[in-house]
Length: 176
Image 1 (cartoon, one colour):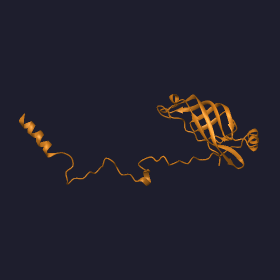
Image 2 (cartoon, rainbow, N blue to C red):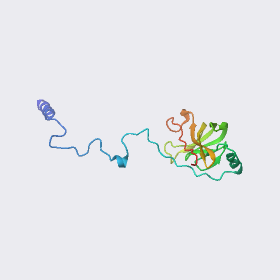
Image 3 (cartoon, one colour):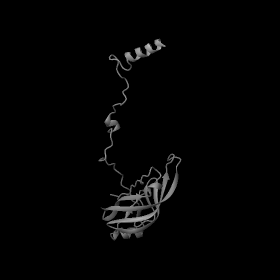
Image 4 (cartoon, rainbow, N blue to C red):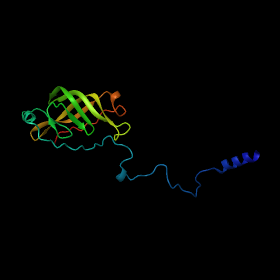
């Protein structure tokens, strides 16, 4: 028994780890080239450019409203509308059955149903969900003598959100 205790004490006294003549080959925190991998910390001041939509030719009714100065909206697919019933706001989310409570140069507000892909457990196997939503359009921009909303915010009940209570992303932009 004394021999075991002496061996343990000898091991503790000798120490463990890297001796002065050894060096660490694989450090715990690798140094990554920031030009290749980006900064180590996220920067809230960085904005990612979103492509402008390529608008489709609007219907005659919508074209006449735009010519009269009514503000329009271009969805992600390029569909041009004024108080549209459907608005595609991202590649996996579409507002349907929209009803607009306001629509003018100061902004637009509507409500309807959001059809969104539920990526649980993965987007590849996810199924669409339909949940109540509101949309606010803002930031009017003039493009070729016509006016369009340049921003959208879609809001849903956080408890109904497919991903950890997050609000859906929107990519509604003016065409210029």
